[in-house]
Amino acid sequence: MLFRRFLRIKTFQALYAYKQDQSTSRAVAKNNLVKSLDKAYDVYVFLMSFLIEFKFFVGKEIELQNNKHIPQPEQMAFLKAIYNNAAISLLENDIILQEKIKARKLDWTKSNDFFRQILTEVKAIDTIVEATKEADTSVFAEKQILLELVESLVADSEVFNHYMEEQFINWEDDEVMVLIAFQKTLASIKQNKGAEILPGFYNDKYEDTTFVSDLFLETLEQEDALIELISSKTQNWDADRIATVDMLLMKMAMCEILNFNQIPVKVSINEYLEIAKLYSSPNSHTFMNGVLDKVQLELRKENKINKTGRGLVE
Image 1 (tube, rainbow, N blue to C red):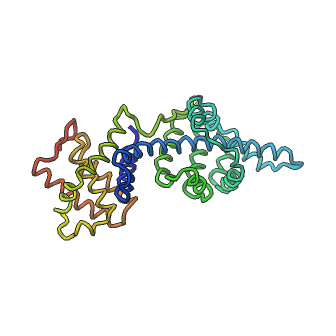
Image 2 (cartoon, rainbow, N blue to C red):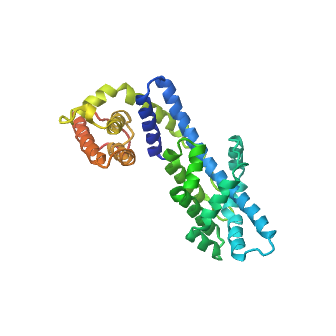
Image 3 (cartoon, rainbow, N blue to C red):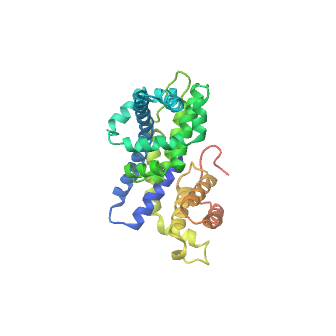
């Protein structure tokens, strides 16, 4: 099971979109939600492909430098350190990854200008420049270079992020999850051992698709009752005055508390408070925490919260 928070965020986004425009049926909206998980996984594969193609571009730059009458030694050393990175080579030779890249028909043939700009930016990252000068060519050191490269581009490069946004409309929403997945894959690389390529961002063996589907549909089906529960603890607030995002996140949290018997109450509340930090106002976290705590205490008194499984009965 891969990062339930990501699944909650995707469900939240689907619910928000559906509430804004209900021209599609709930069933179609739910199916689009599941498809969005596949699209996020495509970004992960694309990021791996980026490293391989970046190496290919650096190889062409090395050829250009060799053809110069007076090649620049420092420039060549840097380029060769990137090109000979053992971690990239392991990704490049990974059969599973190559099959996934091929299946998505990724086309980099018109990306020379993009890679040229990226190379210029990478040359300006001091930590990478210094790391390529080190004599340490262990896989661990090579992985650290790639990690620094990708994290720096995601965090600071307008060129990189603009390119990703052109390729993937949900890049801004998915980048954190994709970066975590990338870090996980890099961490799996060992000396003379290839990467463990993630099979997807959800796994039916662990009922991830059932989780997002049920959370989506049950939040909608129980909406009136959930609003009533929340409103009972916000007497000084008209339901219409509560921020749309806050209300939606609280409805999802209460839906989870009432219907997902194997998820602890504290986990549900904390997860939605963390999501609120990303998508709502600075004060929402405190407001939501107070409301959700009051509601869950009331439900406990009425014996309406039923949790099963070891460690879930509080």
